[in-house]
Image (cartoon, rainbow, N blue to C red; front, top):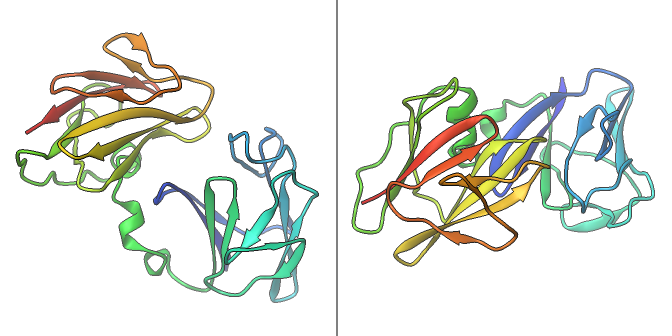
Length: 211
């Protein structure tokens, strides 16, 4: 069964089986796949099943639809093609396991918020972890081993924690809800984190710990 795997900043956020004739993608809530990002048009693109093929049609989007780095208006997709809409990357898979996409993409905090816990790596002088304090994933920890780790709930609130030399910064990425740091809403600019900071995002509270 063909499917698309949607990711942002290297973190897989959803898998969508292409089971119906038309699967629309866009910012408006009536789309089959809603991407809440201003770079994505209200009705951005549609995936159309045609026999054994899947055709991608750009619906006149403002910023365009790209397949493997090239702008397209209409294209038949092949297994493994990478579709880009704004900051979002959609891997098209046809009769292939998701694990073949990129196991590294599922190592961000998004997985622990909705799935199995990840074991944190040992802390070093420049390492850090995020510990979930409240919500369904309370008690789980994620090591901040990547340069950028995306956290939150797609469509509601998404933030990123970026490693910069010997410190980390928190920034809003997507969604109508803005993250709170120690009770205060953060703005458009990245904010430096210090050990013990509390982050509230998408109905969960997390604690940042730096070693």
